[in-house]
Image (cartoon, rainbow, N blue to C red; front, top):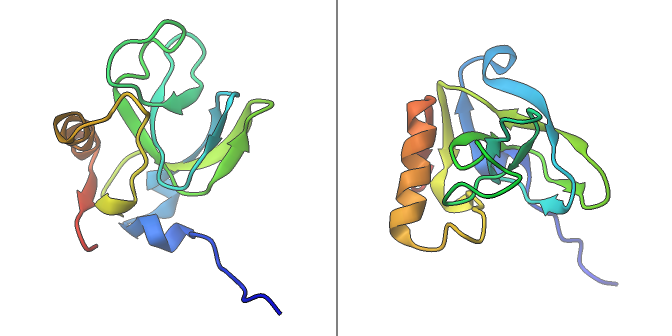
Length: 129
């Protein structure tokens, strides 16, 4: 018999949030992506949907280049827009090593910039949290 393997859970990314009724929101995730737990998201100005936060302004995702939330439940939105639960504001602490970035956020400087954007929202990434 094959061993059971448990996938990542909310507790792997979210280490503290003061009041789930304040820090969390249900948002609409833009279709075309299988969003992993811990995805760093930005809000698209045109439609208010959320997508992986790219390093720079991207056509069709204008506004999403600013990190605005962290996904705390994995969501497969490959075929259609889907709802997702995010940490939208702090005070909250997330596990820094569990954050998932857009492919364009591909070096330490860019990842540090995204983490700084989260800190501005009160979402604090911590190592070994």
